[in-house]
Amino acid sequence: MNTRIISRYLQLIRKSHNYTQEELAKKLDISRQAVSKWETGTTLPDVEVLLKISKLYGITINEILEPTVQAERISDFEQISEIPENELKEVLEQFDARFLVIASMGASPEINKLLERLFQNIDYKLLREQIGMVRITEVEAIQKEIVSMINL
Image (cartoon, rainbow, N blue to C red; front, side, top):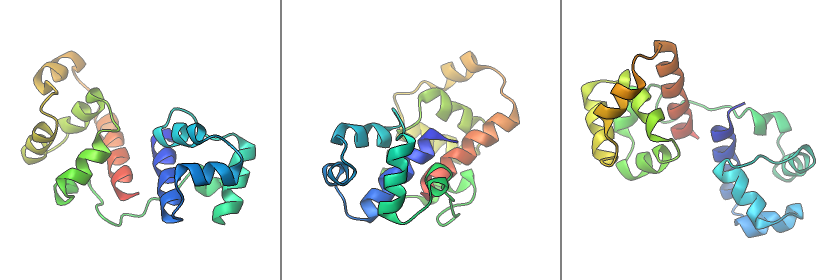
């Protein structure tokens, strides 16, 4: 279960049903702040609220907790350059600097330049030195998570 993907999915389905956070909160009999916390990944809804959400949207709890991410836009990390930079930055801002640096370790020079241009405040060289060697499986897992977030 990936909290970031679930949070993004909860936001996506709310917006696809044209609800504000306030409107959704009223329908679920909870606070707007609770909805905000789910969508930022601070917390997740409890089982009772998940049941209400599933009924409201006509989906299963399992679909909420394990959303199916279709490769609609991109299927590989190297394709992130195909995403408009403002959208890409919005998605990538959900990740911390360490996460982005690890993802960049397995990327082409072009993708590294793109990330460095989008996030000029990150000292990539210093962070790479601090992080050291990383297993390729970790790099691939992080890249896969980023691709999933873009495709949501």
